[in-house]
Image (cartoon, rainbow, N blue to C red):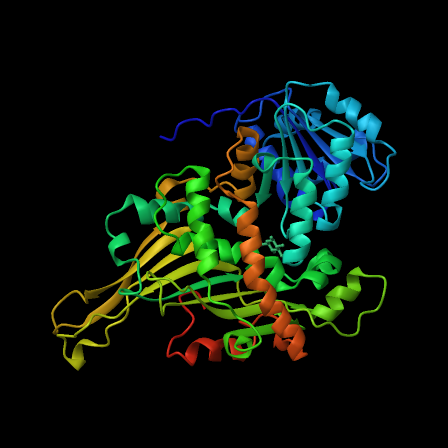
Length: 495
Ligand code: BG6
């Protein structure tokens, strides 16, 4: 039996970008699920803010349409949830409407205030300055910044400085929703709650690590944002580096926010540079062309951009796929490659971390026993979150000693019988509770950009276009060559 979830304090959560993709697909459903589970008390308020001229009722209708699927069996809950929902039309760059918004906020002075900036990073500073100007950073207030923070180190620094002029670092929550995923936190439990793994968790015993985040979706309505970002800024600089840090960090002294973040920061500082001198050997960029996704034919990236934008795009140099080989220059990881790959419109939606151990030093088995495979620990983030440990055993029965490679397989849904909550559910309530452990500190974001910027610069300097790949495949063949050159292959358990 799991203990019932504890309700959080009364809060006002303001979503800037309240009609946007993230609010609709993730934030509002996450809040609804926490409400249904009794963690959000009546009296808390969710305020959507965007430029659209809507009123409370108009926004509630939009939210109702968004949540209808999730709320099918709970129509009364949906009605109660919608009573908490409000809307104020605001433009971050104009004063109109801000007095009215400030008045609304002033109605509940004792509530924890969360300002969630689910907008383009260009607006973060304008919004924070106005929040400061209208005296809204009062009492227990926090600001949540969606990634990416800027588009390079210099712009991230500017944003952090200017946001920091209004909100203290302790009030600033830089969200990376991958840190809220169940399996990522489970990595902490597996590594530091079991005596088995930590003694082997180093270059002496680990051959390499793979991190794959593959999506079947294309860029959808997010083309205008995505075309300025690309996969390195959108996924690698944040989500994938955070996963890498969780695998590679030293044991923190405790789970206190700074103990964990200090250890992740050391990993980021120890990443070996990838720049003009080695980017061509260590990185592969791709861009999807028309193909198939989940049995349907789908257009290519350029067609997707044109479906969204008013101007006609003929060509784009933006990558929708990245594979790269990273290395961490410290005693624990010297010489252990970390292969990272992520892309849109790939063959399957799957995210996993594979820790591949070194082969046994000497085989006592004859050739007739079959090949000896490496042990692998596979942490599946999605879909079907779980952990698999691949072991070698004897094939049961008579007929000589034949080896088999089999997984000890634990799917969380099968083992615990519950669907795991979405990452945003945990993270949103962590903000209300004031727990920043799973959020990125300013120095982490900066260190990640410091590593990513030279890769972007090397790509720009090369002038090479991303390699085309057909939608529904595993990306450009150069990504296969990247790992096969080292005598290894991408994990193919699901391929
Ligand atoms: C977001 C990226 O941060 O993560 C998106 O901006 C991406 O491009 C998404 O699709 C993936 O998240 P998840 O939780 O669906 O794997």
